[in-house]
Length: 198
Image (cartoon, rainbow, N blue to C red):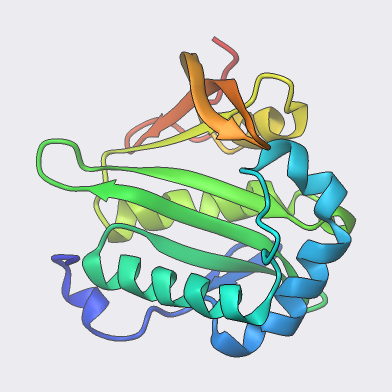
């Protein structure tokens, strides 16, 4: 459970310059499945292999249940990303593997629909989640991992103030293949714009 009184009530929307983040609702299914479906070829190289029922309503209900369970246990918070200017669903971002005690850390993962790429929306979303992690959850460190060939994701993380810390060999099974990943991290007291390629 999250130890903060903040989590005894519904989580409010988080606002950035270009995006609004809120937890997914059951009635987001149609917009989510349409965006994921049209972006499949764009997303598949960077994600775990899609299941045959990936976009089915039953799988969606299970996904929502898992989001709620993770939130209730204090281990993760999933957000949907909405473009402020249009109000349309643009992608998703999760702060997961949340640990307190001596670690006080979490891990950021995200995806964006193909037609929303290249607009700076994900960079804004990552910055918003980082502020939430540090200011509200009082985490000390947040991490993210990306495949070395994923230039867009690297750019997002570096613009959001993350620093590259190393290479994780054969770290995650992506699209059916074990892939190396760069590890990026941001610390609570890092100055803004501290992201580097070191």
